[in-house]
Length: 133
Image (cartoon, rainbow, N blue to C red; front, top):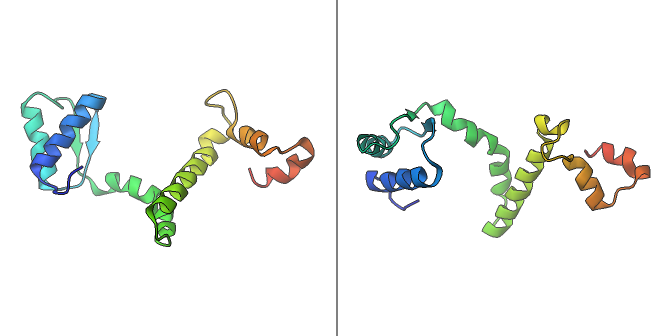
């Protein structure tokens, strides 16, 4: 990302994105005119020919809403490393407790079981740990 949010920086960003990840089906951005003009310029060059560019506010806002509780907590911190460490921890815990991960195993093990093993929770302490996990 660059300091200025102009067509040139958007063009460079989209070109890097295409080179690294290939062509996506959909790109969701805000309604900045620089982004739209850079996207059209790349389409004229043959890149992003099958990609749909959406500028609907609520679609882009889903990501922001997911981090709303983190942003509230982040205001309390004075240093960037402390805030970064906390956000990484919160995101890791969110991933563990997501409903689709709770009952299934994505990697052949349950995350909650692995945490119990790492914490050294024994079978006698299992009942107590059920309230945590």
